[in-house]
Image (cartoon, rainbow, N blue to C red; front, side, top):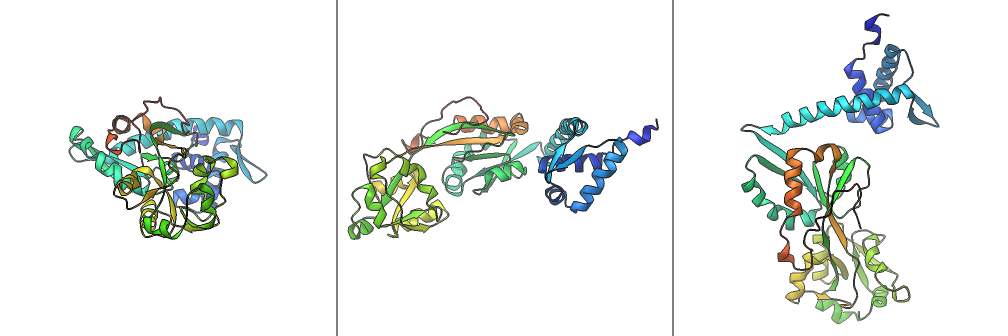
Length: 320
């Protein structure tokens, strides 16, 4: 047999591997900055060289033959090692510094993480931190645009490792001026007043509503959409409506009587803050250093608004 005939070109293997990861030629082309037809051509050429089919289309879905699955597994091992080497070299600044990009939601990132992570840089001088404050953190993780995400979302993608950090509590609040104009004494009163939510559908309030016994559970009829927590805080202060807020963002304002906490006997469901990262990235020294710091981060200044670290073991899905 001609040995050149079975030589598998690395560039074509990379295109094949991206197509199997993305599930379509269009998505793979977008990721590789080439056209879908170029992806298709490269895979056909790879199959011609290998002398066997690697990909089949069933009901317009990309599936792998047994040979294709074998080649995909080999590609995963090889390209993972190459990507790791490329990552280390690209993030290693002069003097041996390594960069790690941390993603978080806007309010938690700007209020807590930026301030609480600063001592880490003194303790680990070879580390540099970059931050991305967004809500679509799982997409950024999967696209390798961030190394670590810290939030309360449920990230269930099988390639991600999720480790619980601490609990987050919530408050239902209104400004004294708003409450003088609107009688809000019980949860059912929320049906007839404006409420502030992260989304138009009121999904932001789902856990809070589940905390209320069924016959006392209101149907939210007047929803004001504000897609940032800080905006919701300011809207509540200005008397736009009743807001559901992370407790750490409102507790000081409640203490100063700028906001009034409603339904004090109602125990609202809590969320878990977690640190999420790709399993293949979690073994990196810089990821382990940051994860360990987050697990032991002192949040006692927030009282019971943010609980202490849970010391829970790493798990694929650890959301409450």
